[in-house]
Amino acid sequence: MASCGNPDFGQDPNAPYWMCEPDVMVDVETLEEASQRCRDFIRENELGVGHWAGGQVYFDGEQIAYISYNGRVWADVDLHNDITGDDLKLEIDDYVAACQASGD
Image (cartoon, rainbow, N blue to C red):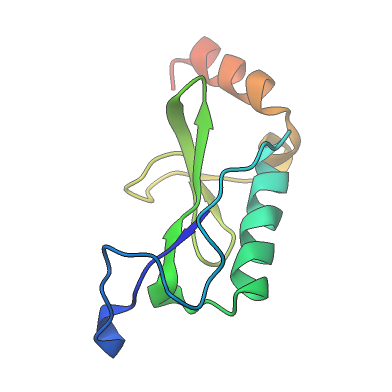
């Protein structure tokens, strides 16, 4: 999870937001948990949408999803394919296996 300066306020978007805790990676079991942890990070650090820089979800070093500011989970960084329903509750390794089996 990461923050950045908000260019709307003349802050550097390539640097962490100075009022936020340091960027952090956490282990999660499900995409639903990843979404909740991101929302908690945003709330606890009082981040606005322009300060949100990181909700990347990795599995074996490869990004498999992205959590947007509103907690929505996306299967791609272009925010075209959201992940919903029971897929959010799957353990991440099971979700990856299901995607591989379906060719996604």
